[in-house]
Length: 118
Image 1 (spheres, rainbow, N blue to C red):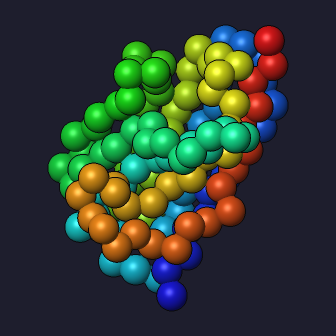
Image 2: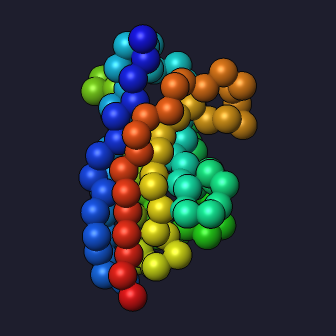
C-alpha cells in the first residue's frame, strides 16, 4: 500500500520561505516522475512543480523563479523549496505522481498547509 506523507508547511509572512518534504512509502519510487500540487479553498487542485526521472524540473508560471523542486531517490523523498512567498501561495500542498505522465496516481496524502500572511 503506497502512502504519501507531506510535511514542512506552516505560517509565514510575505517574502518568507518554507521547505516541504514528501516521503513515498510502499512503492518503487525511483522510476516515477513526481509533482507537487496545491489546493486553495474554493479552487481546484493545481500542479505547481514537476520533476522527472532524470531530475529535470518544470514549474507553473505562477511559481517560476521562486520555487525549486528536487528529489532524493534513495530516501524516496521529494522536496519543494519555496522562497519569496506570497499570500496567493496559501493552500494545502500535496505530492503525487505527475498526472501529465500517468493516469494512475497514488492515493492522495493529507497534504501540508501553507499559509502566507500579508
